Image 1 (cartoon, rainbow, N blue to C red):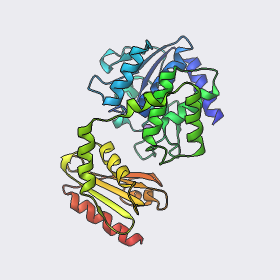
Image 2 (image 1 turned 60 degrees about the vertical axis):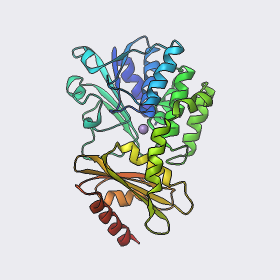
Image 3 (image 1 turned 30 degrees about the vertical axis):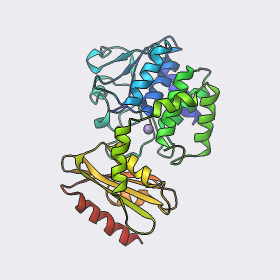
Image 4 (image 1 turned 90 degrees about the vertical axis):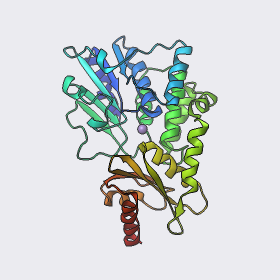
Length: 324
Ligand SMILES: [Mn+2]
């Protein structure tokens, strides 16, 4: 681990310009991590920017950006059209994803030869390989935990508002310290608190609007137990975002006797996603891997080409039967 930290520092010292980017539909884990890296690099008096989409961001990101603005914390954001670093000594820092197609700006890899990749998602065939340095560990709760670990190894610090945003990201990615949470995760949270992370502010960032909540509860209401410990939600025929499926699976996990939960829904045209969650007694990764996906014991997912949700449900039920 320390070896990686030293290599990151070396890369920062050896470059003059930095572009930090994450996955499309940036979330709090990715944004907090980007801000943390931004402030570390800024302290070297080097030029650094965060690449952001010009599309509307989710409400938590909007609130985080507003918070930084109010506190006078200057962050330089650019959109992909404003990139002009092609021929300079530039390092790209990719956070919270390891797949090119999921990047906010996929062709950055063709434009900037040097890049660092820090992520906590499972690797697959389409994981970006051509990088200067990478650290991917899918046993770590979040990218926030990785970059905070790096921060701790340096003599640098971050604004307390950035610590708050990192803590919010950690909270989201662990579903309130329930999933992929280790002693290191709590240590990370403790360290962020010592840097001034504010729990009240964190809750403000995480608040969602009532309509979203109610819409999700309708799906929860229509979910069923498929045996004595597994809950299943079949979504409607609309296309949903991956994280919507994940949130429903996470919601189902809080009910009596539920040890495993699945949410099945369209995530694209003729593309069905399954999001699986477990309290930890049953390994959901083996289920999702059997269906071509992957993840972690308590947190896994897969994608299946299908035009009917019930076909996918059948596949899942058959698999559960076989594994019993
Ligand atoms: Mn993450």
